[in-house]
Image 1 (cartoon, rainbow, N blue to C red):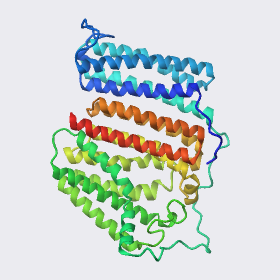
Image 2 (image 1 turned 180 degrees about the vertical axis):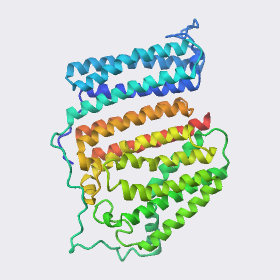
Image 3 (image 1 turned 120 degrees about the vertical axis):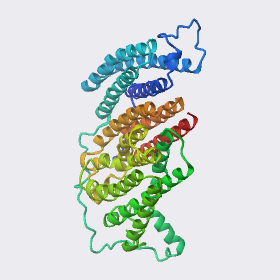
Image 4 (image 1 turned 45 degrees about the vertical axis):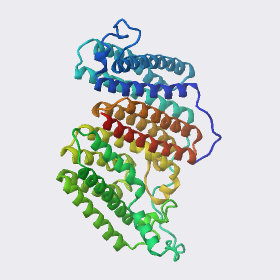
Length: 466
């Protein structure tokens, strides 16, 4: 990455980012209001109309707070549009903001109808859908403005993304002879399972189970999460096996166990098979649908993503997001024996989040991925395009997170947690546009982890309370 002198976001960019977070907040709180039927406790509009200065119930206070925040965000949107016109942002960005501004009165009118009439599920869904339709152009306007402010017209492919064979005089690295004891061997096998992925993906499955209606036995929870750990370990091991030659060419992965011959290929394959079979046995003890989805997850990551998508298409990260989304379906299937509902909504969140998360890592290791021959977006289309797509997918993630609040159902803790951590994530991404450094990319990467981790923990807490 180039490392120009850091600059700070100007006023219009700051307004755009703040407005995007504000629109998400009213979307998430609006979903909470709909789920808790808070509008029925504040049946007039814009105030509750019960003759009191303040509502007397928590639900009424939530409904009134939702309207107050919506009013403030509406003013912020108007101020952002004026600032954009004065600052000379790209015309398409101004047009997107104008669309959002024109939709805002429609959103307010629908809110008034929902508040003053008998609650209708279709009408509430339309109200939330318009909120999502407002958020989308605001995020797009932000992405286009950042591209115009910080984009580098000369930014292009890092190198030709074709793996170069290692020179004959540069043999593949081998294991350190001092690292051959039982503890070192154990560490090598643990590394094959990609343990850093386990906590987050198991948290996804756990959150999906928490969203499911009814109660769960401890046996089902343990078997599902245990099966998930083993499935992730199996898929990770096969990924190490299949990418061992490329791993030797990349600085980030050159010390992996198979890249340095700390574990033989034959033993790694046997290890992956054992983990896979054990995971299927645990999933099958819950139900066959969970087992089928577990098998799909292992095959998709090991074969479809590793062999087909990752080395052959620039959309590898987007399509590969299905691998991270499958644990949500597994968790829901384990709890309900079916697909859909909150599990599908959570899977959509993870699917949209994956590019917003991983493109940051791909930017930080752009040259490394080019050396390995992987057509990651920053390698093929440059970092300017990658930064813009991070904003796009972050916006899509926020829309999906708002929908999850309705599908959950979830409470105010979820709305506030995701709004705060979404703001932190967006701030890190905006800063990345201005700093354009590996460090900024990694900060955005870690902020994305914090966002999803916080979202999942909020789901677990809210679901436990409700």
